[in-house]
Image (cartoon, rainbow, N blue to C red; front, side):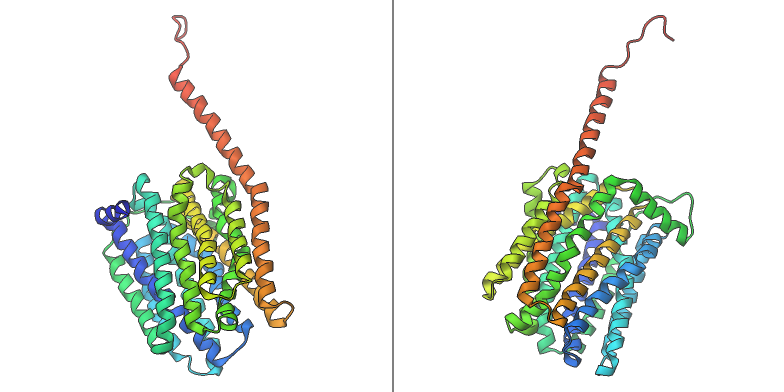
Length: 430
C-alpha cells in the first residue's frame, strides 16, 4: 500500500481531487437507502422502487452527451465545483417529500441530482491523466476505485443503520453537507487546462464530433463498451439485492446495507488482485468476457442461498470481477483517448452504461411486478444472461482486440527495424 500512500502524499492535486471524491461519494451512498426508505414508506410497489433507479440512470444518460461537451469545452475544475454545489442544494430538497402525494418530487430531485453527477464523473475521470504521470495513472485509478468501494461499503452500511436510527431527514442533511465538504477540497486543487479543441464547436457539433471520434477509434470504443456490456444483466441483479434483503433475508435496510457493503468490498479487492494476476494491459479487454462469466456464475449460486454469511461471500466474489473490469476499462480509455475528446468519451461510456443498466432494472422489476417469474428464477435467468454475454464478448470483441495488438506489434517491430537498420547511403545517392 506504500505506493498508493506515496501518491497521496506527493501529488497534491490528485490528493485534493481524491478527497473531494471521498466526500461526494460518501454523501451519495449514505443517502441512497434513505430515498428507498421514503418510497417504501408511501408505496410498496416494486415497479415504483425500480423506477427510482431507472430515473437515476436515464437522467444521467440523457444529459451525458451535453455534459461531455461541457467537460471538454470549459474548465474542468470549475465544472466539478459547480456540480458539487448544485447537488448539495438539490439533495436538501428531499426533505420536502413528506406524503404519498409528493412522491413525484422524489423522482424530480433524483433526476436533477444525476444530471449534475453526469458532469462531475466524466470531468474527474478525464482530469486524472492531466495530474498524474503515466506511471501513476494505474495507481490513481486503482486507488480511486478502492476509495469508491470503501465509501460504498461504509456509506451504505452506515446509511442503513442511520436511516433506521436517525430517520431519513437527518440522512438527507448529512448527504447535502458531504457535497459542501467536497467543494472545499475541489477549490484547493489545481487541474491543469486540458488540450483545447481548435474548432471550438457549438454544443450540437461538439457532441457529434465526440461520437465520431469514438466510432472512428475502435481501440477506444472497445474499453468504452465494457462497463455497459457488463451491466446489461448486472444492473438487474444489483437491483434485486434490495428485494433479497426484504423478502429472503427479512432484514430491511440493515440487510440491504450488508449486501451492498459486500458488493463494495468486492469491487475494492478485485482491481488489486486483478492487476497482480493480469499485469499485462494487452490482456485486459481480451479477458473481460471471462470476468463476466465468473460474475454471472457467482450470482447464479447466490440465487439458491438464504444463509446470510454465505450469501455475503458469494456477492463479494461476484463483484471482485466486475470491479477489476471497471478499473481495466477506465485506464485503457484514459491512455488511448485524445485529451480533447476524453470527457466526451467518458460521457458516452457512462451513457451506454446507464441506458443498459436502466433497461436491465426495468425488465427485472416488470417480471417481478407481473408475477411472471419468482425472485429466485429472475436472479438465475439474469445470471445466465450475464454469463452468455461474456461468451459472446470472447467470440467478438476479444477477437478485435487481439487483432489490434498483433497489428501494433508488427508495426512496432517494423519501426524498430527502420531505426536499427537504416537504408545504406551510397556515394551516388544524394
